[in-house]
Length: 394
Image 1 (tube, rainbow, N blue to C red):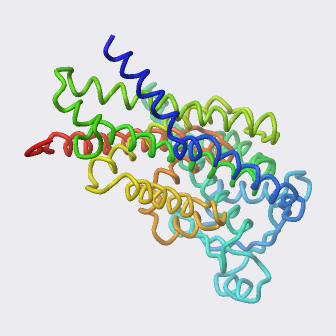
Image 2 (cartoon, rainbow, N blue to C red):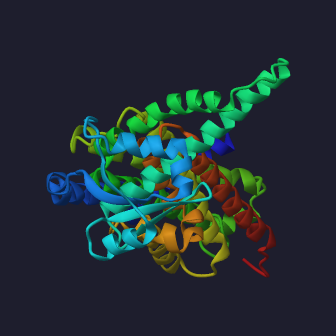
């Protein structure tokens, strides 16, 4: 009963906080409206078209049948989903073409490890990078399946194995996926959608303010309520948990309102994986709440300073994930990849990208697990700090 009573009290208290209500409910909707007004026609002016690239035609590429076949399909004039015009050249010629701006980039295969070289960052450059990653991932799957088939034949006692035939059969099945790469990318590569992905990430992380305010209510040095909690006979964890649960429910209401507004008013199409998008938002909201909890317990400052730090961290994380420029995420991935590995905003946006750029859910679940690990670390930090806090008098 005490849990329910404290939950109701905390829930009402949070809704009386006008600043929290603004950042949780109003600000994401206002920003989403501005995004829709600013970028509604941008897709027509930046429509993805066939563009020129180069492939370094070295021995590694010539002997790798899968890469050969995949890029052949993606540059076939008969393919309605054609993506590239390809120049097969030596490396020096590829560098010259790039320097003369005749191609947007080139790919060189070095010991089955592809390297994409571009002159600048942009949509086409990002597409080339993602397509190459997809081909590499599928190529590894082909190798693994081929090895399994060969092992099965050996276990059956068949030692007269046509290795080349097995590999070609598996590669032929996998190449059908490559034929759909352009189609998947072109239908879902949307400047506006990328901005809405970062908006979802920002809304999830703004739940950190709810977590921060919730924990401040239970700290003796932050509020009179916290002083009463400290001397109360009620178990402290029960009170803290009920308060945080009220904050989490409030945050989920905010993210739900954002989804309803963007889907039914702004007509944003989140695709066929809407349930996975919602799942990611739910876990992302928990990560935001956990981050706010950590900031609230670690920092020895008043609530205003903590709120400013929380907003700054959230907006900087969203900036790195592409909110202020879609190429920023690619720049960070290329130059400081560890930064996006520990950035919860990038985990959320990357998880959303993966639902549209990849046929498998491996990368999506990788980001889900990363968010859970991030949340666990934040909670452990918070718990450790709370245990160490002692007061001479309250």
